[in-house]
Length: 452
Ligand code: GLU
Image (tube, rainbow, N blue to C red; front, top):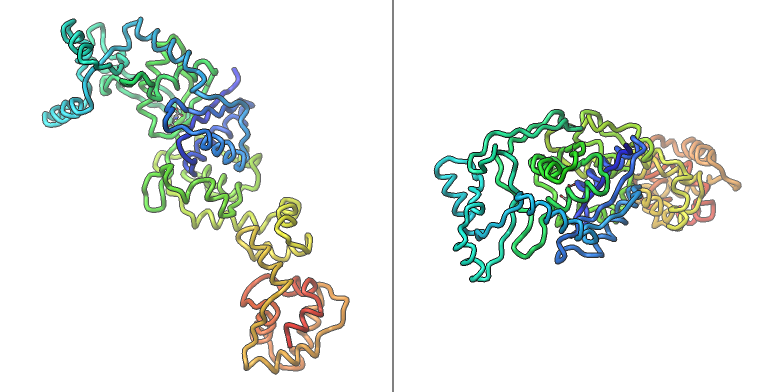
């Protein structure tokens, strides 16, 4: 059977680094198993789902290096969801309930006061004909609950009923269906909650493994029961830990700064984001992995740990810098050209070790082309001497050492007091790439102008 996984975001906002983690783990699992990765838009919420968000999700995934093998939309599959709803109703497994949210809330509070778990009392199964007629006369429409198979014939006598699965991440898992309320599958307005359409689509799309955040562990118990009620075998499951902000809060779609779009706009390398989003919260080290192929061979889903992992932008900065420091010219040539950076491979190799983001190369190229010299009063004479000793062209990467050796001899200066005034005069900056590498690009004419 071909391994088939799906990443199933609701297109109701921009996806963030935590969603990227789910997408990446699914993608890597598919690639490791020669499988299929489906991008499934869970867009049954017609009001909040937006086409622009769906497009944004596809764009963000492409930026990360994920190109789905198939794209599906739940909104195009309503007939299948309706058929499943009918099937469950016909089997007596989906029943109408009329409680308002307030009533349900009061019931839960009453149970809590008696120290009982907040499990729904299945009152919907007990309505008399008169009550039902009354609801309908009042114009009330029901919501519909799935009758969990946690009893032996009498739903008012639920018994411990264990659902088991061997989780790809968490190992053997157990959910007791008697500890849960019958889930609402259909709202009063006839729209579906996510639970049933997801199962129906997973069946029809041949999904073999559902890999998602561990906030869905309890859902899985319910969904396995629905798979069985639909006459299907449940797929495999893997629940990865969730990411939180550095201060421990959960990530939400409203957390703009950790959206993939914001990280892309901040010029982070997609592989830095992918490396961190995947390897954080695993038993292995978080390393900067240079390509998706390498990440695919490097990552093991079983290494994901159970506790939440903190996403730290400082860690992302470090990974990004590590990738940039090692990045071959071929990998950036197009981007450098687009940013107007000249100097080819020699310039890139000179600056890459000093920058944390590729776009900073443009800053140093600008400093080659023009700089505001900084010359402290006490260095003025020294700088003038250095200007007089400037070698003739042609210049190459040895020019700097030839020049500074003669300046050293003439002025007696050495170390920082020799190099720093020259650096500040030539680039206007107190730090930066090797001057030996920059000097041939600055050239004699500009160097002389900056020293005078
Ligand atoms: N749309 C659901 C969510 O974003 C999908 C969960 C799942 O993967 O089943 O939470």
